[in-house]
Image (cartoon, rainbow, N blue to C red):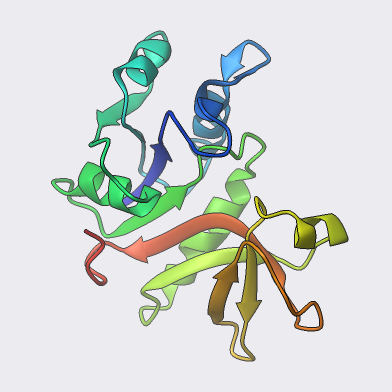
Length: 180
């Protein structure tokens, strides 16, 4: 089974309550969810939340929500708790602030696991602007000659180095490493 999990922390540092920000009269997180469920390769999509406020805001939508601890340091930690007792082979971390997410990129990411040696994968774009370089909210990634990410940055010092714009979606085998 392939599960998509959208970690949804209510009080994000840079934009508190961002996941509930209304876009066309609907919380941003619901736009992300509705795009994610259009993926052809996800068997299930869960929103992993840390707040009863979020659960209350989503009660009128047909969505699976799992409450997780407030103490998590990252979305990956939140996802690990959410899927702890779920039988799944592949976990897809879908960022809750990507309301225009193309479901095809989720499918493209999942397709990478057809290669049985792949344990973890993420996406990056060659489209990166000068504004992206100067914006700490845009994560930049350095990729080696084999296509492997070598480091992620919010701020870059050496603009002579080739960086890509990190898309912010990850996939990994549930049994890969210790994500908790």
